[in-house]
Image (cartoon, rainbow, N blue to C red; front, top):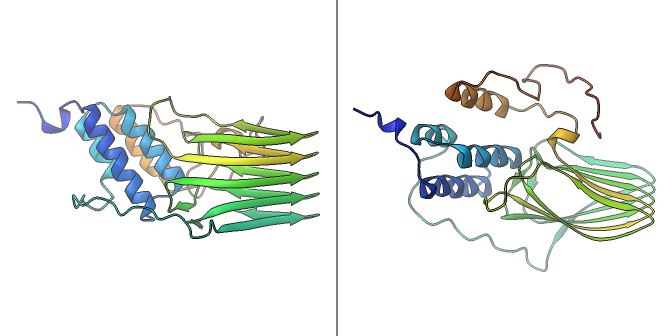
Length: 230
């Protein structure tokens, strides 16, 4: 008799898990990095048992439709400004409105990997005047970069998920004048220590994949890796 967990997952079941993950993220239960990582795992799962692992630490689905995310009134925006200095936002923080980053002969770093994103899309306006704006996101999200660069540059270096998948979206409007606006993924930034590594280890064991994490486990000091853009 076939074990129920060995039954192959359908596309509809994968999409249902991805939607459940999205709702959990809006509720503040998953960071952007966790959402991206688990979404990837959902789309690559082949059995129902593998899908169950992805959501086994989330509340049971109540069957109720998620409440719509209301846009911020008056298009509120939270600003991070570096004028002849540095401004950095890392670690766990809440994103529930548009973000703005302005670097004037200085640097602004927004690290979204551990952010609790309470909206369906992260929208950022980045302005660099003889400065540097760096936005760090987990690999696997979709980045939509638009804007203008005058004697400067704007670029994306993120490993995105295959087209057609419902993955988190980060939209950046960049204006660079003799400065740079960069959107970098995990593979191009300083490794992030997070509890998600333990969940990924469990996923690898389920698939019989040898453990070769590219990020240090919690408690392990970070190491300098060649080719990182930090």
